[in-house]
Length: 254
Image 1 (cartoon, rainbow, N blue to C red):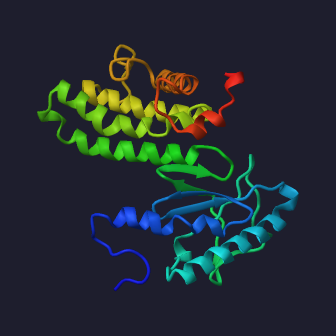
Image 2: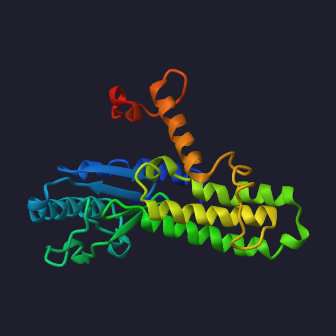
Image 3: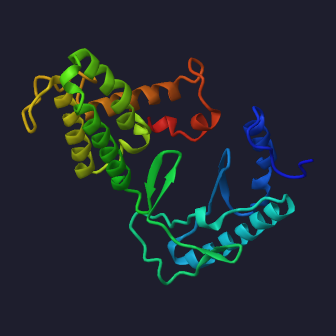
């Protein structure tokens, strides 16, 4: 018999695990949380001059989470846990007390991956842009090896189905606050995709083809997606969207 946890490999396993772990947020007293499958995150907000007190509260939260895990016979791996201090400017963390879980120190990270989006401690998107560009260029390198035996239509479909989703994933989150250098890098990477589709030489001009894949350049594509998202928020009766997005959106300022 299974006295704790969920048997692996069953069809109902993911659902049962979600039910099993659903009460872990009850361990928190001072923090907000985000729970998705086995990915549990919690957040505590404080002023910069009260950061040490905030870390003490976080350690208290971790002690209660650890107690919940012990009661439910679940092991939490500290080596897979991350901590990050988020502010508008990078903060020096060498003087801060350690965050610990099960007597193991959790190092402060400069960025964390949250459901496919890389969030940096200074709220910039340079790390996320770097990952997207490297991933797209790597895939593009593999596709070019077969470009000699592919039609333009096929290359267009490959870019739209395999590469464009990397540019578009989470764009409404980062597109409004991305810096000029990151915007340039994304556009340069997308230009490489355009040259692949139309078999243009490296560094050749793409002015006549720039709108043929997305219908616009990349920056305009992001703006259109953001406008569509805002339109959905302003018309909740026409679109099925989570209630919390409507509640916390500053509708008056839009």
